[in-house]
Image (cartoon, rainbow, N blue to C red; front, side, top):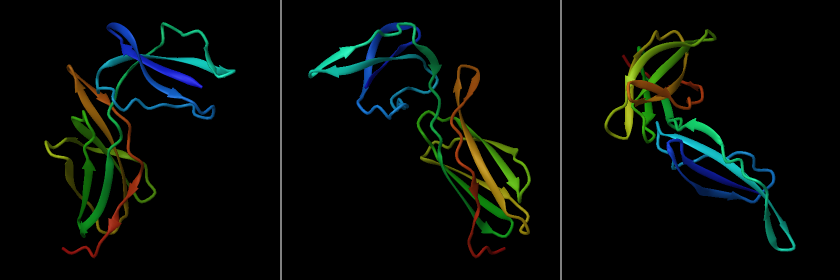
Length: 166
């Protein structure tokens, strides 16, 4: 298995985050990392021999990375013939979103930069042409100093149509 460690890039000591016992597990998501902070991660391999944990060498340099926003949950609904409601559930640390849209089988275009609301969800009403079907995705961002740091994008969401009324 593996033991995952983290420390702040600015210094400090290694903190054990997780012991991964399954050989098939090759990824780990640090859900307690704070958006915009720089961390260093490393792993230590171990093997059980006669009930004892034998540890390998640890790479003390590790891998530096900045924590980013998780992908938000998103829904898109055609609520009127000329408007889609885009609802984003705000993950921790999000400042806003870059919203992308494609019309029919076209290509994606960034249509809006939306600030995140102060409540749990952010809602945007997108004016659309009733004769097309639209697909969206969003990329969250966080302000870190004067920079906007992008997070993980949502999957592609095709609008759901209700009995849209004018």
